[in-house]
Length: 469
Ligand SMILES: Cc1ncc(COP(=O)(O)O)c(C=O)c1O
Image 1 (cartoon, rainbow, N blue to C red):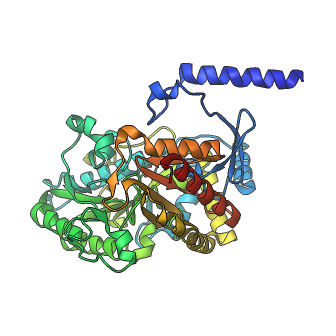
Image 2 (cartoon, rainbow, N blue to C red):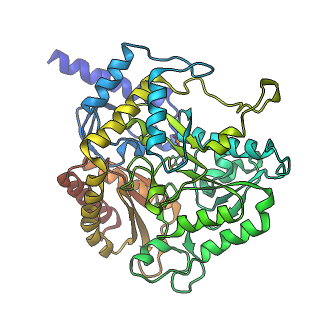
Image 3 (cartoon, rainbow, N blue to C red):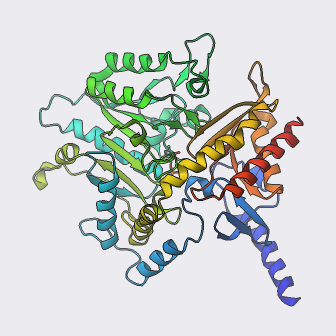
């Protein structure tokens, strides 16, 4: 009795202190402090438990990072084992055992030609490193004739993180417009939406492509035009391969990425693929680029790399780019970039264990089966009056809510429709997050069929309750 009372008091105090001391990311704090916060205490498998003992299905993989579930024994013990050796040691000028082993594993698994691994600690920095690599590569190119290559081609509606460099190649006005005066100048090309066909105006190709309707590839032509006009001043093109994730789970049509690769090669522009969201098995292959059988010049990964345990990111590149940075000490060709926790041994040990589980448990095969099941489960939701589109790639799903199905009129931002649906889901025991009016489902890769069913059922009833259809 006494213990229960103490636990309740502790929980009350945590709820007070959370609102008093924490400024939460991507969160309107005025709304946040008006509600009782949800504070997670522990997790197991697919479930998170709050400080009141309530259980929630983790439908967002704790922000797209959890891979094999929470408290996976092999991951727990890899981190514990590493703690007994060393928790942190720098990678500046010296090395550590897990960082070396992980780099080798990544190079062995990555798309062909990506043999050099540069570590950092989150998705934004992994992209930022890629931008600096590409920029510096051309600036110090031995031919001396590429110094004007200082810009990047990037996509409308793209998201590459929140540091100033990665925001500079972002294209989500809601997040990025405020910072425009701080940002480098980039060349923005249309997202893979169809903006030419009368029939599919402003719709992503993906949903139509499934029915074989839209294949005009007008968005590719826009990329080619930008390359034709600007190739001499462009260091690299930056793309989220297969899916514009934070932009609303916009799935690219098959063949799109391959054609972008061909164009980059044709116009001599480096290709940077940001696999932060789609990498590490999320779409059914270890790297999304494998789905289109392409190799970029630079590839960024983060999120799922450690199975959702610790913040480790990596930027992979080719021998050719790497060798452009070699030279005498006083030539200053060094990549002058590095973070304090770069190559953290605990994180790298978790990442090694994570990749080993993929091999041991044949995770990727299971992902493809689960993705098929998820697609079947989601199909009936397309009939709901306020569901305008359902987009899926592997185990990434975006359900777009609309005011009117026929005109696809969106809900006004002020209606907070996405937020209301996810709060309803929370009351029903599931944690998910929206991207505006798009409800995102991102189960980890080992959700059971029953858990996938439950996730879809809660989503359906939450949408119905909030939109009253
Ligand atoms: C494609 C992509 N790139 C970069 C990032 C930024 O990653 P982080 O939040 O770890 O900085 C994200 C995050 O969602 C992302 O989806």
